[in-house]
Image (cartoon, rainbow, N blue to C red):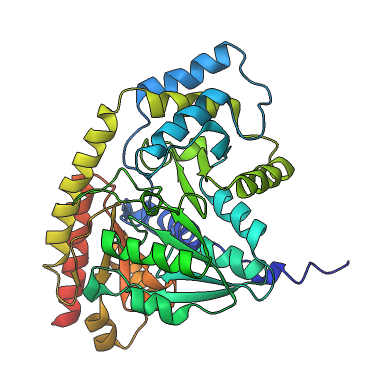
Length: 400
């Protein structure tokens, strides 16, 4: 048979899903026969059900036979609602035509990168980072230029770090705040400095703001709040994290650049035709309906953050900063890795097989994650306490 394209081997994946498949197999074949189970503290899946009013809106849409194609960029009511939603964090108001509704957040990455990147173009990406940014860049023949998020700076970089990486081949900077996997939040000062560099060097920005409502310290600040940035920025957002709607697959791209909005719409048309109609009506209810469920979820995440942060810092060889947003802890385990002369991936395998707790190695998120493991605190308080206790017991046995 004819070979696959030369692009295909360059396409990476999201290793978190591979880890889950491995864990499920281990749990089924090894633990379940003994009446034991894994404690899952790794996944970025909201720990709550979708609010009832949102599900009801989807059901009502089905009952009314709203089950047909929509225009590619989405139903007008949702585009208008998203424009208003996004305008709250921007220096100018967005209009409905600035919005393209897509099936989740990943398509925004895929479409913007496809619209911009030719072989040899450079994309500056914070590292560690959500892996799909780099995967798609390399798939298209672009070059990933990592900029390190430093633990000592609360997982920020500096404007000077960024300035040194910009070349005449740089086309795009990707930022994600609040950040996966570190839980860090870029400072207002850094975002403003980044914006000035983007304008000076005529660069595009992809601003992944999927965790914009999950901020535990301070307030979310969008780069689109800086004058001149809405027309060179695509904002990525959606319902998955804020409204616990991951399975609905509903996201959006928002930009004041008409050519970019048109390109994203054109790519979406070729790819999916349109986004699930019932999901769009659910999203409309999410964005315009009562927001108290979101406030309650964020309040609970903060409690779980504080709980897990304290428990982890009580484990020998583990320490972590208090994250300001999202629902992740990036935990430094360098002492343990050096003591055992192992990798973070090997440590996670050991914790799964011996302590029966699943977490992710920092290397799932890039080169600069090599001394870290990532926890997620979306699980119940009971699971967080049990998982941390299992890990502590196992690590203490190693230190004896």
